[in-house]
Image 1 (cartoon, one colour):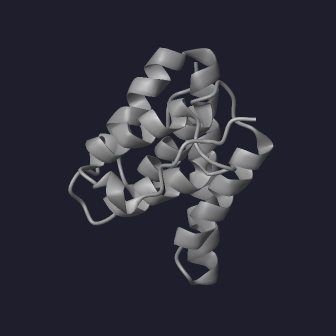
Image 2: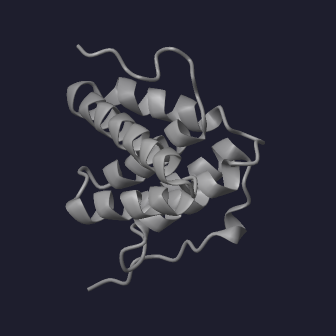
Length: 142
């Protein structure tokens, strides 16, 4: 089993952002290419503006995403708990609203499923972010 890049305890905004996005993407059982693309867009919007630093931020985030995604495939319960801890580590910090907003952006693909909405409310609670600042409408039924 590969060692998680988060096992060292270096919990920060990038890891929490990736964890929140991946939990939302996993809410319906799989990460679609569209969800992965929205996560990358969300990360890009939060990357430092300078060239090399911004590229390094995206590279680090993608590496973290791939490691955590592999964890979900190999050991889903453990990966879920690890992701939750990464998110909870940012409770009350200035990056918390950005983490919740990024997770919302990943989930919005015509609305939210009940599972996505419930998970977003959990993420807001873990981060101590008011969910009223986020758009949490249900997905229209077909």
